[in-house]
Length: 147
Image (tube, rainbow, N blue to C red):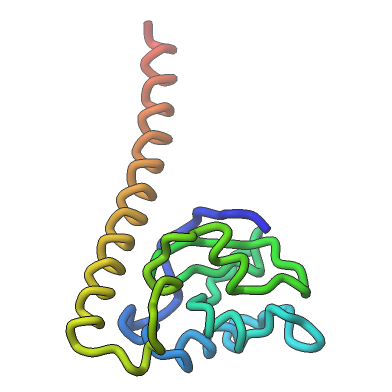
């Protein structure tokens, strides 16, 4: 199991749709999740654990949590999505819910949504910062050639 950090593009038209289990589940069918029979990490189990599927050419089994934004790839058929999620992101607010997501009060939902938005902002800022650092390195090398 590897922690990944790729494009922020989730391949989902509406980020709020991911609150819905069926929407997360649909991402696994849309992109041909490789583990479907006699596996622990089935699309159903992945979606229940908060993950949606965002494959790339290099990482066909890449998933991201819709709340904490943790990305994981390198899945094995017997990997348990809940255990893997917890081992890589133990403080994920989705994992720490004390009640079923369908039974959240408005106050609970808004508190969790705030945490989700903070995690998204941090995720996207880290992505942009990494890209800026790469571009700065290229510029620095070009400047060094001129001196």
